[in-house]
Image (cartoon, rainbow, N blue to C red; front, side):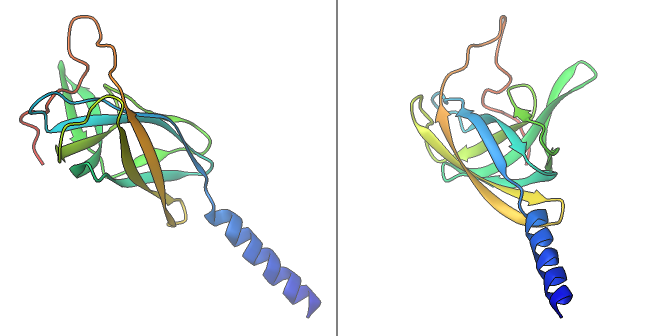
Length: 160
């Protein structure tokens, strides 16, 4: 009987460890908008302690919040929504202009430098467990690369 209790406790303990994945978000920020702009991007570094993926995001400042990726198709930079963003165990995944990012669309108002934008991300672990991660992203301008835009703008013509 004693061995059965010990085996049961070990199984419960192992199960509890398997379900717990910590998620660390560093340097979250959002690009400010200009007049009439209805979309912007949010950027950050995400590190999960175990294998996981971001499966959705939401924010009270946007009607639509999605995870997007930018990629080259021949000589044209394109963007598309992804169904999930893999988070390899222990490795930082950078969401940055020109790469993966959180797209905030159908904005409910302007997003101004100095404000804080709340973003809720749903993370799914390898064993199918889901957890929410609340991010507070500072709105701040980014220096533009030489010769042009920073990969975002208004997303005119972007279809959903």
